[in-house]
Image 1 (cartoon, rainbow, N blue to C red):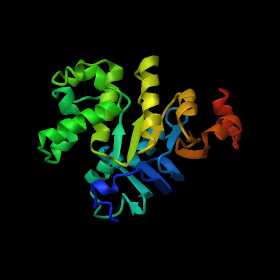
Image 2: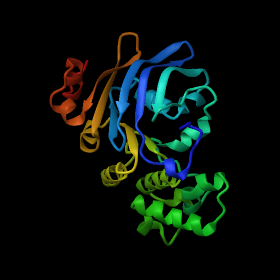
Image 3: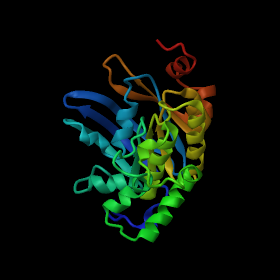
Image 4: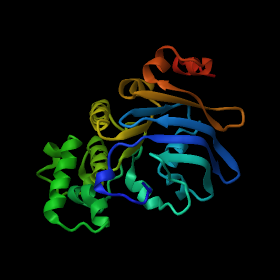
Length: 268
């Protein structure tokens, strides 16, 4: 199936296969030679010190890297059997299949809670109010937010607390039924209770979506992910994949000494 052929019947969890991926910002290489397979309906965590290329790699998975002037990739990123960087592939359609939740909650400030959830559907011309109401309620329920906002759907999304705003952004992401959800440190700006709610939500959503999360919180990676990738930048400051395996193994019996030093706090 072509990546441009998106329909309701295709929106199920899809795996990601990365083949020999290099990422550049102009002449500077940021990521080198990454190859890995992210399984459907798994949570994959990307960990490593600042500057190792975690977020750069994450943003390459839905072509968000291209919004940075001069950035480009070499290699392949396959969703199913479709390379998202193949010629004539529409980046906008890639982002319908691969949603993204950012580090800081970013509800659209001019929109109500209801409008925030269904904004992606409105953008593509959905006008059936009954259908939109059903989708908004369903997604807010799945984000464990409905009971908190059902009586104030016409209020601005920015009126919510930080944790509620992040769950609103997750509801907005799943409203367009992606197959994959990328999360770039989604809990770094949240308090412990809000963090727990988002982690519980991730565990629930992985039944339907493939989730890739960047986190500096190794305890979080250990709690929620099925597999973990450890990245590190070498002397040339180019991010490389050091180890990628089941999360339990990586945190209890890593194969690489560099991984063991990092997770034990002895790195550097």
